[in-house]
Image (tube, rainbow, N blue to C red; front, side, top):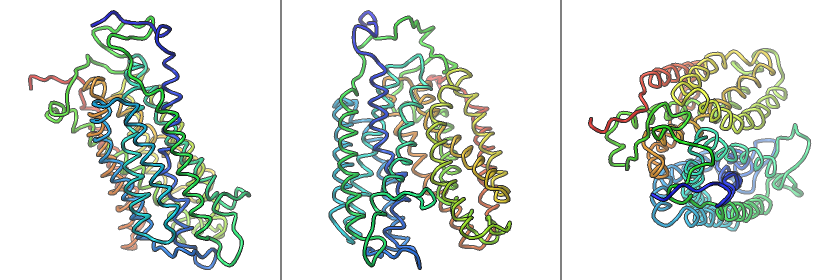
Length: 448
C-alpha cells in the first residue's frame, strides 16, 4: 500500500459531491412521475388528454421504472468496479436520456413509452445511482453519513424541480412545460412529448457533466489530518471488513439491513403514493372536517408536491450527519421510532392543514434518511472496497418495498376499509424495524 496522499495533491474531494448532486438531480426524475399521470390519463371534467392512457398503464410505466432501477443497481455496482465509475455513470446518463427522448417521440403509443421511459430510463437510473455513493464513500471515510446524504439529496430535490417545471400545481399560480396549452384539449400530445424530450436532454447533460468527476481516490489515500483508529470511521461503531457479495449474503447483518430498509421504503412510499387520495377522501380526509373539495385538493397538493419532497431531500443530508455523530445503529433506531410515531398520528391530521403539512413533511424527512443511513451502514459492516456492488443487493429491498407499500394502501381503498389499516400496519412495521436495529450488531464475524 502506498503512503497516503493529501487532498491538496490530488483534487478537492468536495468536487465529487458536486458531481454526485448533479447526477442525482437527473435521476430524481422517477419520483416526478406524478407530474405526468394526469396529462397522460386526463382529469375527468377538468382536463381531458389526447393520450387516453388508463391508470393501470401510467402505473405500469412507473412500476417498470422502479423495477429496472432496483435491478440495475446491482448490475451498475458490478460494472463500475470493472470498467470504472465514470464510464458506468455516463452509460446510465445515456440510457436515461435516450429513454426519455424515445418517450418524447412516440406519441400515444403506450408500449413504446413503457419501454423508453420505464425500462430504458429505469435501467439508466439504476446504473448511475450507485456510482456517486460508491465513489463518495471512498473519498469521505471520515464522513460516511454526511456524504451519503449529500450524494443522494439531489434525488429528492430533483423530483420537486422536475414536477414544478413540467406540471406545477395550479395553486402555485404559474404554468409549466405541459400546462402551457391552447386548443380543445388541456393536455396535448405535442406539449407532453415536448416535456419528455426536454427532460431527456437535460438528464443526459447533467449526468454526463457529473460523471466527469466520478473518479476513485488512489490506493492508500486518506483525508488530510484523518487517522483511522483500527480502520474505524466515526459513525460506524466497529471495525470494517472488506467483504464480497458472496460473503455478505452469509451474514445476518445483511438480512437485518435488508428488512429495515424494506420497511422504511414500504412505509414512506405508501404515503407518497396515497397522500392525495387520503387528503381528498370524503369520509376521512379534509372534507370530513368541513373543508370544501377545492380546499382539500389544494391541501393535498401542497402536502404531496411541496412539503414531503422538500423534507425528503433535507432528511437525506440531516440523517446522514446525525449518524456520523451518534452512530449508524442509534440513528436508524431513532429514525424508525420517529417514523412509527408519524404513521400513528397521520390519520388524525386532516382536521387542520398545518398539522397535516407538518406530519407529511416529517414522514418525508424520515423517508429520505433511509437513503443516507443504509449505504453508510453497508460500508460500515461490509467495507468500502465493494460498497457499490454490496449496496446494490441491499437496495433490492427498496424495489420490493416500493411495490408492497402502494399495493397495501390500494388494497385498503379497494376493500372500502379505513386508511387506519394501512397507516397502523406501517406504524407496527416501523416499530419492528426499530427492534431489528436494536439487535443489529454492525460488526461482522466471518468465523460464523
